Image 1 (cartoon, one colour):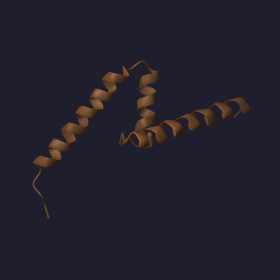
Image 2: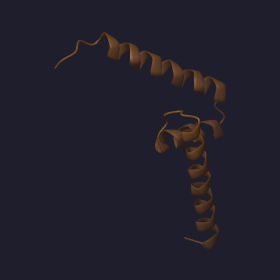
Image 3: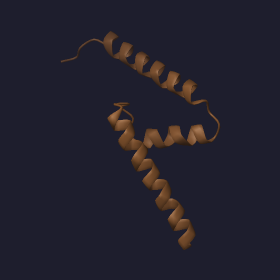
Length: 73
């Protein structure tokens, strides 16, 4: 790996770390892997507002599914 490529990878990792810290402060409940996936999608042209709406809808559906499952204790 060239020095230039290593510098690029290091810069990308630092950027992701910073975005993750901001994500934590904003209580987005996104883990680092999910955040990286979202960033990649946005860099590929996905509309950020549409992506946020999809994530919110998936969370609503997951919460509704948990609330409708019987308590198995």
